[in-house]
Image 1 (tube, helix red, strand yellow):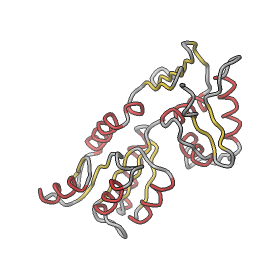
Image 2: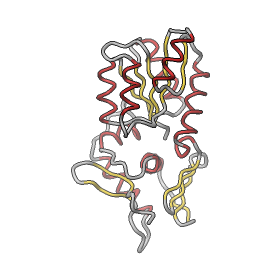
Image 3: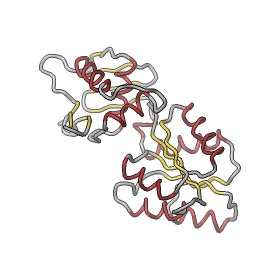
Length: 231
C-alpha cells in the first residue's frame, strides 16, 4: 500500500504517463487537470504528496501552493512543482512560495520517482519505510507479515492492504468508498459492503481473547484506527 499522490496537470498525455508510472511503483494516484478542482480534492481526501504543474486552468500552481501552505491541515504536505519555466528567478519564486522541490520539463520519470521517495521519507517515514507500527501492531511490507504483541497474525492479501492503509494514518476516518479506491483500485467494481466483510475478517484475525479492538467504526462515515488505542 503506497503513499497517496495527487497529480495536478492539464497536459493529458503527461498526466497519464505520470499516473501510470507512479501507480506501477506502488503509489495510490489521483489526477485532476484543473486548479480549482485540485482544492476540492484536497478538501475531500488529503494526499501524502502533491505533484503540481505551474500553469493550470483556474487557479495557478503557485496560488494552489500558497493556499496549501496557509492551511493548518496541509501546511506540511510535500509539494513538487513541475514547469516548463527553467529560469532561476522562476525556480526561486516556486520554492519561496512553498514548494519543496522543482522539476523543469522535460524530466525523466526515474528522477521524478527518486525525488518523490526522498520527500516522502523525510515527511512520512512510516509510509516510505518497509515497516509500520501502531501500539502493539507491527506490519512488515517487505515480508508481508503482521505481528500483534510479538505474535504473528495471518492475514489474507486484502486484509493486509486494509490494515496497511489504516496504519498509515491512525485516527483518520476512511469512508468505504475511499477504502475501495485505495485497496481494490478505482478500476475494479466491488460492492461497497464488501469493505465491511473484509474489515470483519481483519478484526477477527487481529483480536484475540480479551484484546482491545484497534479498529474504530464511525457510524455513517467509515473506519479508522483508534487514535487512543496505544494508551
